[in-house]
Image 1 (cartoon, rainbow, N blue to C red):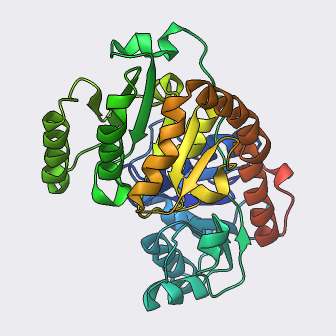
Image 2: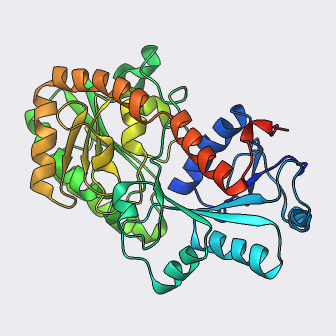
Length: 356
């Protein structure tokens, strides 16, 4: 990676897949398609991502070709701290930008880090409400070329060899925070009255949450529904599964932003979600899905039930979701908004940069 035309560095200081990682995987290629010189730094990203190496950090003392400094775009505390060291201790020509997705009161340490940033972005109105500094709200977008409506037989329930005519799904790490138990409980209550539906759960089960998952599977077996509530594990490519669903459920008790409802809606799938994260800002109530209070089991079950009883409603809301996402949550809109922030910090026209 040659650094002379790289104006933005997006560190990723976490090996495991996370929401932040998923954001970078989608955003950085979009930025580069738009002509922005941007590179990542850190592990856990695909090999084809434009990346600088740690040994290249000293090269950041040299200013880029088209600006007096670069932007260091942090999304985690350790990335903010690294930026502060590079800018304030090592005196590298950097401007620091932080994106906050957290929907909770920040610790004193995090508030101190944020106060040292040159600019701050919040991913939702709710996350912005917890910030004590001026900020801009830029909601995440979705790549509608990657997440798109069904196009073939592989995008239907018949490709799964599961029973029934319709699929309802819940994706994400299997744990209490994600509300997997609420989804399973709702399926145990609702599926006996809706024989055309099968439920799927996809997501990683870590060792510290294995007992939680085992209890869910035991509850399913006790209800004699093991063939209709199926744990898929962590699948290599989740995108086809979104297209196979008629309804997606996001029952998180706590969330940062939460991209899965957008991924589902872009795939022509109606969504029932809690109001955790930015979910309530993503779904058009009664048009593309429904939002209920986080952790409220009765409300979640009662929001899911009409879709299982009326698959045509699920289909129509899925169709409406495609337009909704395209108009309000296209990835290019997020990229364009971030580039305005970069340009303001750099004081230069990003159109003069080029991509390697």
